[in-house]
Length: 328
Ligand code: AQP
Image (cartoon, rainbow, N blue to C red):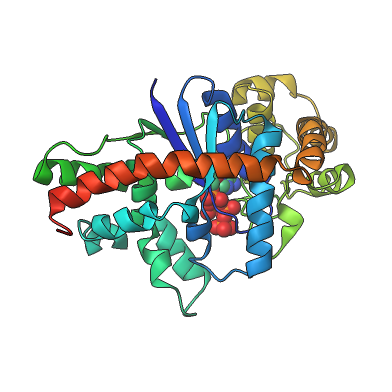
């Protein structure tokens, strides 16, 4: 069975973007792949985090993974930092990564621009290498990611190939899996930018644990245009295109099918249908989440998960250290 590895940073409450771009894929794919899904707490601290909130977000993510349908018998769930080999391999890979490669990473450039000249951490700059380590440590065949992470998987492939060429076959070269619909869900208030969990203004961002009332309000006040036609055109109609994309992704439809279904609707009635689709998707997840978050399940699943992944990662790390010549 092929192996799948992916993770999410606990930098805030999970969003509809996290669900459509990542978790929905994990749930669909974990039936057919040996699946490793982690909480990327080491990635989270590349930007400042409050300790208590970070821990709460980590627990929440695991409860949401389970509530969305990840079966802990089929998927191994774990906290990244609890397996020390992620950091260990990352250092070795950093020594096989070029500055020019990291300079080209658009996500770093975007964050750099967003934060202006405030002090950015070196971790934010080198985190794509840690991501390569997260993936290569487990010989992943596939990595389901949103659009914005595609470049990092490309870097992972380059590092793996470079290492294999120099030291002999060591790492599997992974393939990204990008969702057909919803690879980049946009902010409802500024549909030119990605919906992100760490945004200060939450009006444009649907959180998976938002109440029905809040979800409806956020969607009904999503920024659109004055054209009043349900047509997908990301350049000229980014707001309505984003809502079409959300509806398509949640209902497993093509964009054209959504356009056809809602031809003749006005924006108000279309938004109301999108709100219903989001609420109907999230309601059962929220109910399950409430059952899980106060049970022992999260702890048990994570204990079992870390025990399994450490064994796999230790063997891979030993192999790499041996090839590079580290230790005695
Ligand atoms: N809006 C989105 N649309 C589609 N996919 C998304 N993903 C995140 N947001 C969207 C995908 O979810 C996976 C996990 O992402 P992450 O949380 O580890 O990192 P991120 O992409 O940086 O997410 P955020 O919400 O934007 O976090 P912050 O605000 O902390 O930077 C990835 O596969 C991602 O593509």
